[in-house]
Image 1 (cartoon, rainbow, N blue to C red):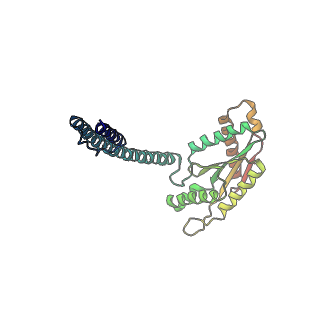
Image 2 (cartoon, rainbow, N blue to C red):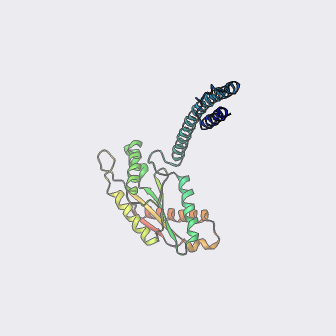
Image 3 (cartoon, one colour):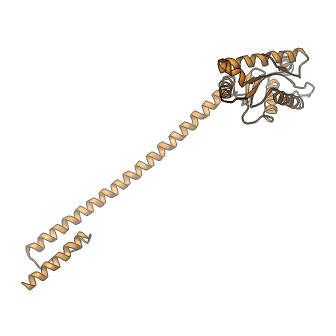
Length: 263
């Protein structure tokens, strides 16, 4: 009886060892019970090996999935970058790299709309045109004319702030919105732009034909937006007023800035 009790206690210890993960336990002293115990541990070893194989397989599949997700994320990032590149191309003038006319209208309208939230907000709208450009083009060729357009764009860009919206309006015309700028300061900036362009060396081979611009400017004040007029109409009216001032500058001799004060 004592021997049986001792064997049972030892068997209980071995069962606890198996429960703790030690599957190398063997029983050799209790006949059929030993065989049953050993078969149990053998089955557990087999199941454990199967589980480990499955875990390894799952780990491999998980790693493959991570790699696929990584590839997918990379492809999506490349697609977004490509879409942004083409979007930017659709918004940019290919010759100067400036924004195009449609982008100017979209962004300038949004800027005017934002002024509705400001009590004393204002912005200035400028229309600029290269003087005698057709004659310059006919005399020195279209490639030289393109250089003149790029020269003007670069000269103006050196003066502007990040908040300003500058675009090639079409041909030799440019449009500009000066954010948070009243008419007095806008006129001063316009004069700086005019002088900066006039001081650039001419792209003509003999440099004998200076490139100058004429500028018309108008100002949009937030008070005008209180009259239940759409932001788009206000912008169009401001551009028309600036354009009229531009033609006045041309009539007065060109290479001038003219201001539209009452429109």
